[in-house]
Image (cartoon, rainbow, N blue to C red; front, top):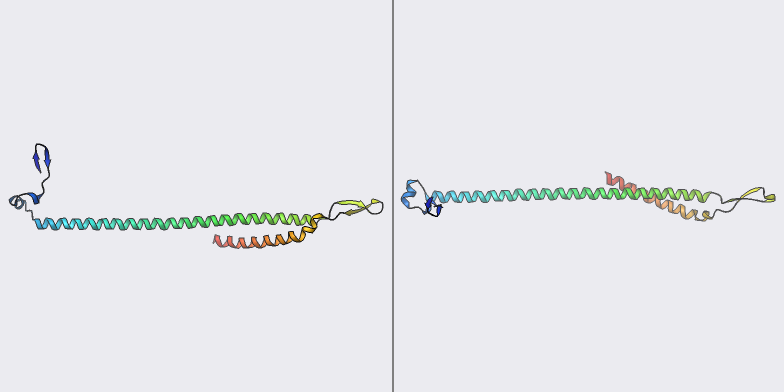
Length: 154
């Protein structure tokens, strides 16, 4: 270091005269080799840091992919469960409608002296085959959804 009126200035050994370099046992070849070694070490350190960062990024991407897959599976399971519940409700409604359609129509007294209890035809009875067909379809779909739900929950 050299002190001047304007402050302190750093002076490198390579810039000093030969006799001063020898007095402090400065060897320019050793200094060059040391600088090259330090640069190589720093380059290796940077490469190691980049590799470690790449590994961390890869692990984070893999974890994010796993989380996204788990979330998608959860959403699929929830959608299947909602569909299953909806089909169960439809089945219950159809069973109720079929039960109503099988009932006799409104009662009235007729016959001789209006003492015989008779029934009008049930207007819903004509819908019975359609309701039973729809019930069969709903049950089939509910079975398929249940199988998919069981598979998704494994």
